Length: 149
Image 1 (cartoon, rainbow, N blue to C red):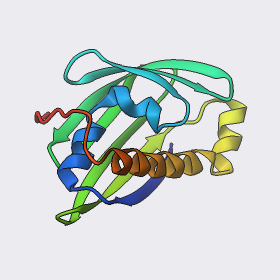
Image 2 (cartoon, rainbow, N blue to C red; image 1 turned 90 degrees about the vertical axis):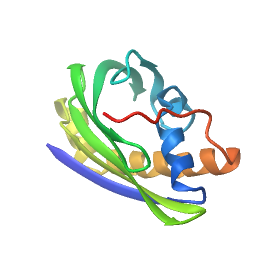
Image 3 (tube, rainbow, N blue to C red; image 1 turned 135 degrees about the horizontal axis):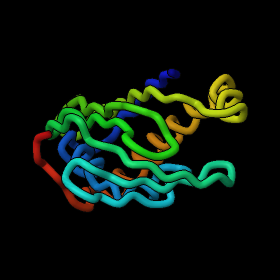
């Protein structure tokens, strides 16, 4: 199992960042390689990704969700094995820190080489930077889901 931990400071209130993160269908706007995400239930999502020309599908379950604090998940079925958590930290009334921790299992030669080269870490850094730009440019969230899991 490999691990990545990255964070970004975002110039929006913590509730705005958290609310946007709960809008999984918007992830293709800032996550490289994510083609689409379907929210099937309050806790189940179906992902379609395309990385290096390889398309993969998997289901992920939200295992914990606390408004303005954290969203945790794990994959259940499909071609990807990962678990992670994104946490939201208030810095002041208009700024927060978004931290993502991911445990994943690379499969096959190409993914293991990519893992050793830090490609996943680089991609997550880019995704968080694009999330920052996406939410700061909008200035407001596109929706929210504030339930507890």
